[in-house]
Amino acid sequence: MTKILIVEDEVGLVTLLKYNLEKQGYETLVCMDGKNVLTTALTEKPDLILLDWMLPSIQGIDLCREMRKTYELRTIPIIMLTARGEESDKVKGLSYGADDYIVKPFSVPELMARIMALLRRTTPTPVVHNLSYGDIEIDFSKRRVLRADRPIHLGPTEFRLLQFLMEKPGVVLSREYLLKAVWGGSIHVELRTVDVHIRRLRLALNENGDKDIIRTVRSVGYSLDYHLQEEE
Ligand code: CA
Image (cartoon, rainbow, N blue to C red; front, side, top):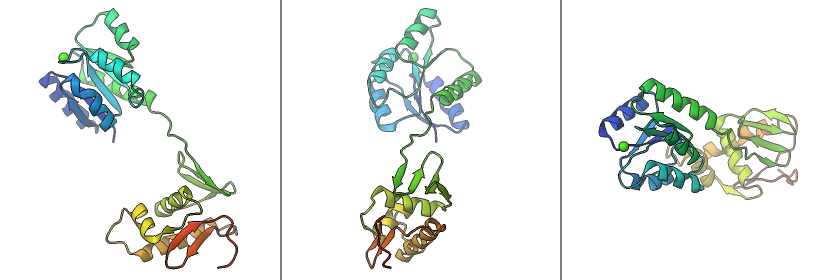
């Protein structure tokens, strides 16, 4: 869910923004004072910030500049809200790192359109941190698994299982560990379920007659081992 931090000290405007943003399906957070903004942004990692220029304690523009200097916050898109409409303020706002600027009073549809446009242009393509091991590759951006460049079709559970195994190749992961990692430790899932899904994962990975690389360590768990001898 896209999270928007509203930084605004006018109660009426906060209510209006909160109501309309939530109606559009955004999750909202509110800071009515400048002094809480940086910590809130750091802990909540909003996807976009609506930042009022005139705030108690700290000016919006200073917050904007501060966020752009903070590594964890510098990529969060910021729209400045301001009562001033002078061109020089606009330039100042943008040069301090705001991504867009809207003058009060603004229409809600216009702000919504600006928010959508900004989110569209600033949402990074997902970080490609593909995992690979042997001839198996997980492409997270496409949610795709390849073995020797051929696509392997996995259900979501097998996909997650493979992901955890690939993160620690060669390490024996207990069934309890996998159960917790993949199913979130649901009390309704038995350890045997892990075996069932491992079996499916194995079938899918080996469907082209490729060698088995999932090692079963009896009564303990499983590991990914490319150098597995055909002993089982
Ligand atoms: Ca204000």
